[in-house]
Amino acid sequence: MTDSIGTGADSLTVLSAGAAALARAADLDTALAVIVEAAASASGATMAAVFAQDPDRNGLELLLTLGIAEDAIAGFGEEVVGNPDHPVHQAALDRTGTLGRTGETPDGSLMTGVDFPLVVAADGGVEACVGVLTFGWPGEHVVDTAEETRLVAAADLVAAAIAMFRTSSMATERGEWLERVALTDPLTGLANARTVSRVLELEVARAQRQGSEVSVAVFDVDAFRELNTASGARVGDHVLRQVASVLAASVRLVDTIARTGGDEFILVAPGSAGTIVARRIMDGIASLDAVGDHTISISAGVARFPQDGTNAEALLTAARAAVATSTGRATIVEATAAGS
Image (cartoon, rainbow, N blue to C red):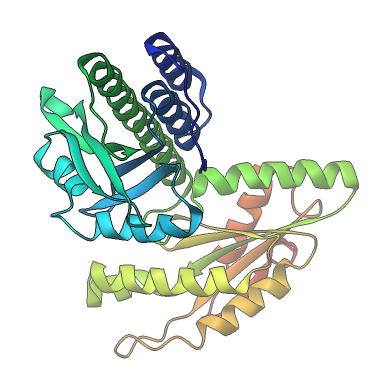
């Protein structure tokens, strides 16, 4: 927010500032400040504000003010945003600008205002209003043709900046979402097979360098196939989510837990505490409510680097082989014991 606006900029300066802001500004606030301040200076306006359509709800939000006292900004924003009949709000709703409207400043003195809707081309070539840009002068002020041209150009630059930065932000958010989808199991929100495989490779490499250990535990939900058949896939999915919640709450910050398909879950635990963590997980699972007459429990196979395998694939194979030898519910089988 800037408290005062200078004078002396010409049309070329306004366009040059706008082009530079669109090309090089690091964020939307910076771009808007450069464009609006240049346009206000060129026209001698003592105040300006940008309101934009809030992308998350149906309404306006105040993005920028220039030349408005700090203690008056909140009230001004609420006055415009909360009143669809306010001229600034109306400009956004009607997509029609106003030139030479008169009003009062917060201290009660006369002012002249102009409002320009911020319009951009949306999907399919249909125009969309993304907000409104308003300027103000003390007393009476006549906007001539040349000045109107400058201010309209500034409004177009502001509209372009809002559209560009918001499109970029949406693209970034979508990229982050796609990355999360690629790395997580959609049913439980845990890491997926791809992620845990990479983590295990990194932990094994770290342990080789440091001469330390890594534990791998493979968990299977006991009698899950029978539960799924008797109660249906929806109940089975609910049980998997419950198990995943216990797993996530039971592991240490340094551990990684993943669902790798079906009813199989994998824990990668740096150090030698794999069996201890597995026991903690089983204690948590024991507190889950039964599904009908089916008590929820899991069994685990635990393998350690380097005793049970010298690479990620060997460790997973050893842990899976261990859990496959389990003969009862809620049991933990260590790979060394299973192979002896």
